[in-house]
View 1 (cartoon, rainbow over the protein chains, first blue to last red):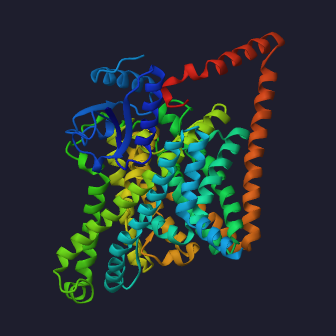
View 2: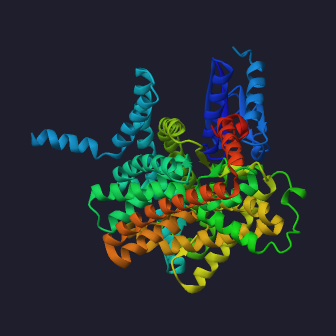
View 3: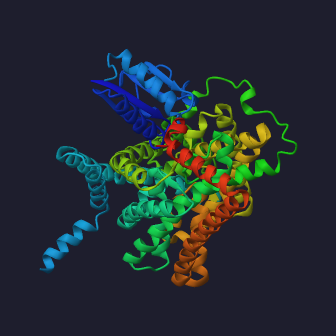
Length: 96
Length: 487
């Protein structure tokens, strides 16, 4: 199963919100088969997820976690929709 | 019969069980299937126990710190760290805290649905922490357990709409929209920072922090585990040098080299915070989505109040400037306390990072670089002195080596504590009822004003046109603002 992970520095608030929003946009697009979760920067290592979503403020710290998707604004649903759609396509999921 | 009651009482006064039941309700409300409900409920139960286990680890690393500080400076040294203090508080006040957290969410939804304060406070971790503080203050004020929950929940619900409202004028400058709010216990400190930036902006000529090149390689600052361990190591070593190698090696470390001992103790503190955060994450995982879902259904035009990192992406340079400036404020405040001979509040690095950074971003949006520096510095001073003033209100908890860190704990805790000192339980109850009345009065006044305005400005034709326009705006609202995280 493809795994997307939203990451922030404590893994409590903003990554959780991005996680819930990723769930929401995947549902909107009718994409299934992707497991979404959230975590703190300190406990994630390369290979934990197929794609890792972070805000641009922690992009530098998240380098090296593999396929890192950097969000310019973590409250912009349009940006998230586009980037989640692209990532889903990269792992062979298409909108249903 | 009594035996059965005793067993029931044993079960339902365990905070882990209460939190698990809240998760159970949350999962049921979302219409999850049996296996998901079972899984989520058990995970929450275990998550809470993980959280409680972390308390032991944190306390184990703070006790020697307290002893060392006392020996070195002859005053108490307190580390403001929400995770550390909450985990300890929950051992004694866990059931009340969990119930206040739960009913506070319900009151938040009611207030958002019926007043102009449309905020839904979605940062579950800090909401849980402040619920724990309300539980302590009301218990110290002498309320019966059921009254602690009743009045605590009202305080919690009021808090959840007021804190975001205080920051919102400044949030609008950052995000350019009124649809998203900031929900964090640093709220009053961040708003204070915004106010300072506004008052000192002069002609507004200070350039934005984002127009400067900032050194790379500071990315590690974003890793909480690393930054907490490193900063605590520095603090432990400094205090250790004052306490002296002899004292530590004879009294605390059983002869182990004091530097090695202190470095591992600092790392242990970070380990404790790591465990607590892991527990909190599991506990919230099932509860917050339910709260979010229910509030979206019941509150029209709700504004989600979200955790501080939502503003970080708007000005990454201001984040680092804000952290450093707030931390400097914390050190200045600490030195002042050492000079005055009071209990010493050691700078809490997570608080300076999270709320200092947000104050920096808000200050930058208001008054450029100068605004960012001064806003965060003001926040840093506030979150150093407020915890000091808060300590007496917290009863026995105030004598622990850790305390609550962000500005809202100080401000709202002192209001409740001040009422208690001034007039006991009656004053607290009156204060909360008056606060509710104020929220509704503001709502009615604003509604009346809007109506009068619409009437005065409109000829009958224009009024009709405006009504139509209003309908379009409301109908089109979700589509008009899809890029804001608001649903």
